[in-house]
Every structure is written in C-alpha cells, then in structure tokens.
Image (cartoon, rainbow over all chains, first blue to last red; front, side, top):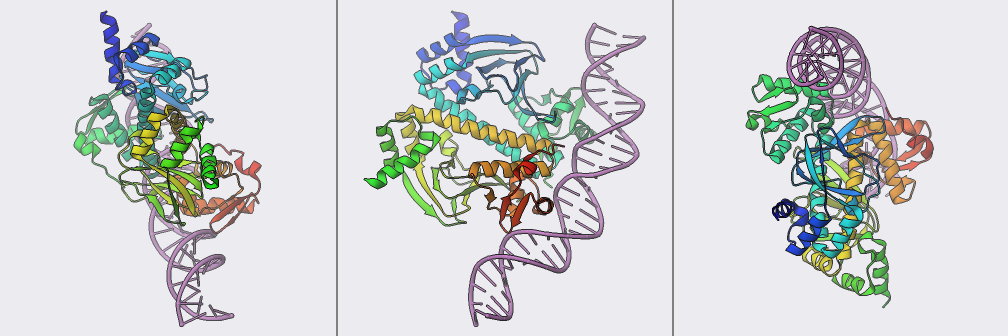
Amino acid sequence: MRIYEEKVAFLKKCGLFKGLDASALARIVEAAGMAQKEKGEVFFRQGEKADQLFFLIEGKVKVTQLSPDGSQIVVRYAGPGELFGCVPLFGGIAYPASGTTAAVSKVFTWDRETIWKLMDLSPKIALNALQILGDELSELRQRYLELATERVEVRVSRALSRLSKKMKTSELLLSRQDLAELTGTTLYTVSRILNRWQKNGWIAAKRGSIQIKKSSKLFSVPEK
Amino acid sequence: MRIYEEKVAFLKKCGLFKGLDASALARIVEAAGMAQKEKGEVFFRQGEKADQLFFLIEGKVKVTQLSPDGSQIVVRYAGPGELFGCVPLFGGIAYPASGTTAAVSKVFTWDRETIWKLMDLSPKIALNALQILGDELSELRQRYLELATERVEVRVSRALSRLSKKMKTSELLLSRQDLAELTGTTLYTVSRILNRWQKNGWIAAKRGSIQIKKSSKLFSVPEK
DNA sequence: CGTGGCTTTGACACCCCTCAAGCTTTGTGG
DNA sequence: CCACAAAGCTTGAGGGGTGTCAAAGCCACG
C-alpha cells in the first residue's frame, strides 16, 4: 500500500509522533482526515470552537490574531512538517487565532476527541506535544523580548533571519504588510527599511518577495 | 502524619497534579525537595543548566529575561500554587529567564530526571503540563498582541487588571520599574501615567505599591 | 488597457524615550 | 533621635523614531 507508507513517512517528520511504534503510527494515520486548500482560504477562524488539530504536509500557513480595535498581527508562519491550531491539544475551547493558507496547502487533521484518545493510548505523544509547545513558547518569548526592547529595524532583520532559516530559502514570499504584522509595525516603516537595505545591496525586494543577498550584513545586529 | 497531608493538600491546588490518585501523589511528595528564600534571592538564573522544576507554595516570584543589550523585562509574576522554571518539563537545556523572589517564598522542587520519571509513571501529569503550558502560551500571546498594537497607557492598565485578578487583591506591591519592565516601557512613563490616575482618584500609589480604587474607570479600556 | 492591490514617498505630528536634576521615603549607624 | 546615604519616585526639557494620512506609482491580472 504505497500511499499508506507515504503518509507514515510524513508523520515521522513531525516531532509530535517521534518515538512511536508501527502500530501506534497506524492508529494515527487511520484516524487522520485530510484536506487541501487553495491560497487564501482558511482552516479555522479566531473565536471558533477549537475542534481540530492540523498537521501541515505541504504549503505554508499564516497564523494571525486580531485585536479588539481591528489591527492584526501575524503570530507565526508554519511550514511543512509543523503543527498548527494546537489548541485542542491542551483543552482550549476556542481558537485564539486564525489559520490562513499563504500557498496551496495540504494537511492532516484530527479532531479533538481523537487526539485525546490517541494521547491516552500513546502517552509519548503528550510528551512530544509538551516539547513542541515549549519550543513555541520560547520562540514567542524571544519575540516578545525583542518587541519590548529593540527598534523596528532590528526586529525586521531578526524576522527575516528566522524565516529564512525555517523555510530553508533565501527568497521569502511575503508582502510588506505581512512583514509589518509579523514585527509589530506598519507597512510604511517596513517599506522604508527594505528600500534602505535594497540600496545597500543587502536584499532584492520585489512585490510580495524579499530575496536575501548579504545575510552577513543584514543579520549583523545594529543593536541600538 | 500532619505535615505530609499538608504537603499533599498544597499539591492538589496545582493543575499539574490534578486527577491523580493517592499513591501517585505520595510518590510526588516523596520525590519533592523543599526550599525557602528571602526576598531578592534567586532560584535560578538565565542561562544556567535547567535541572529543576519549581512549585511555589507561598510567596511571590518574578521571572525576568535579559536582552543582549542589557535591558530587562518581566516575563511574569508567579503566585502561590503556580509552577515556574518549567523548562525541564519539556526538555529545554538552559533556563531562558531568571527566577527571583519578590517576597519570602517557599517552594517544592523536583529535578529533571525525577519529573520525567513521574510523568512516565503517571501520564496524566504530562497532560496537565500541556494544559498549563497552553495557558501560559495564550497569556503571552495576548500580551504580545497588546505590546504590538496598544499604547503604553492601555498596556499598564491591562497589566494591573491581570495582576490584581491573579493575586486576588487590589493592592499590588510593585515598583514603577517593575511595572515598566512588565509592560515594555520606562519607569518615567509609568510614573507619569500613575500620577495622572492618582489625580483622578482611580488609584492610590505609594512607593512600591499601587492600590486600585476605581477599577471600573481604570479598566475601561481607553482603546486607542 | 483598465482596475485593484501592492508599494513608494513625502509631510507632519506625537508618543514616548532619554537625560538631568531634584525630591521623598526608607533604612542604617552613630 | 538625628544625620546621612541609598533607593525609589517625580518632573521638565528636548529630540527622534514611527505612526498616520494622503497621493501617486507600479505591477499583475482579467
């Protein structure tokens, strides 16, 4: 059964299912639903009842949060092999954010009861989940620290650095607006900064794309 | 054995040990170390090897993080019944922050191997840990959103609101500096804001203490 | 080839940081 | 009990980084 083994291979890439035996993996695959969405569609919306956990097989997903006054921030970008919409894992009631595709994306899904049943059968999953949440927490703390103490220019540089590392590419497909929401600033300020860097030859910016040319210059922190 | 039952009673208050049977609790209490620190002493320092998990029995603990350029932020305040220094729970190597007492504090401690052994014996602990981390993550996200989108005055008001709810008191014992590090601003700005509120009769501010008088006014968000 | 969504650019304002100085409270030792 | 020092707090002046708004350019797509 080719397709079945393919699925298992994908799952193994995900930290959540590390160290599980074949029978557990089989259970997990069996319980998984699948879905595919075009660019710009949503998997879940902020405030909705959180009854599904998602695993990104391929594509890119943007997780965003809306503040009461209407401004939006990007919580994170998820790439292939990552989980998103993790709330059901830890018993949250509603999604605190929205998950939108930033490119055609394929996912596995499990619903809330299923994932709890699976964790019950394979406690290792819960331990793995802990680690994933822990990593997410520590990255968010890092960004929080930056947001509180660094200037916009530094934050944008760090964001690009993190993204290019995560996506394993020097060409990042995101708009000024996206980058602004990711770093807690405005698209105007981002635009000015990118142009400055472009003039220095550190990047090549196009509409909806930023190609990193001289990462050494770009990522050497100007600090204050 | 009076003292033993007292310890168990404390533990039950903590989400981490919810739903465990007597024998499991016994194991946990047995494995726990105890410590007490005066105000201003530290339990662990940022960067140190993370080999202990802490449970605050009584007192108050400030968790702070230092940025490379030397400025400091307050990640959170922990009150009685809360865990802190959770890194060992999810396999982190070093503490990403420091834990200092903000008042005389008593704690239980478990070291890394112990807590993993306990989780192995009682998988319920891992599930509970997931929930705790999840809550922490969602609070941090909330604060991140605020930091990115709200003005200082609103952030300070929210911080006071959250703290007074958590500590279950209207008199908060913290300095302007602490409040500034908690909201990502400077003590000067905090001082000005508090004075304004004081003149309105919304709070009574003293050295090292803020007494909330009119929470309705204070917490009614000025939004933008 | 027009329309709509990104992006750039300028002008302007203002929030808030920075620095400096002085004040008040608390604690300590004579 | 007073004097002094240290720590925390207040207040003012000044400047700069960024947000805000407006307008125009540019690119992609139908």
